[in-house]
Image (cartoon, rainbow, N blue to C red; front, side, top):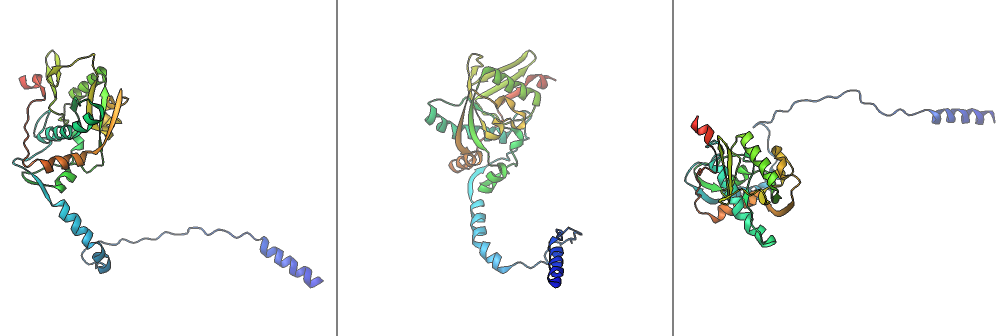
Length: 254
């Protein structure tokens, strides 16, 4: 009995001991240089090779041609690439919007920073379109009140930057203020206007807060990049010019 009691006490003591959780004592690391000395895994290479070749072939496919360099900074308040981007998005999106609503888009506006690369003179490939628009932004149409349009105009004047604007929008800054025409008609403060932009800008991206809380919003389920590629595929040779759709006459006189 005595031995049983002693054994019971020992077992109880053992099981009553708290097992401490393991603790991190030290972190060690080493730097591995990635260079030509690292041998590629042939199995991995052989697995991805057909997919890589397919992607490279698709990206290098020629879809259009430009006789001039297209850049976002070859003008003061407009640019060849900005004009092209806004115009082609309008051209591709308006039939979609019209088929759904029976109405037409009044003009398109995007942001200067959204143009991520220029297009050099010569053949245009799918890769050119991906470099131009690497984001997954989609096209949306917002119905804006006249007050929102005034905010948009003030934003353009304050920014003094070549944001992409379609040819339906014509803004001239003068000594007396500014003159705005939309589709060759004077701005009407009693109307609302349908403006094409991206879903990123519609939520206030790039501080374009005038796109937020519109009267109506229409999501076209059409990515900006896809619109660019579709336009290039249907256009053999790109034609674009600086036409003065946004100009500051005060600056020109100084």
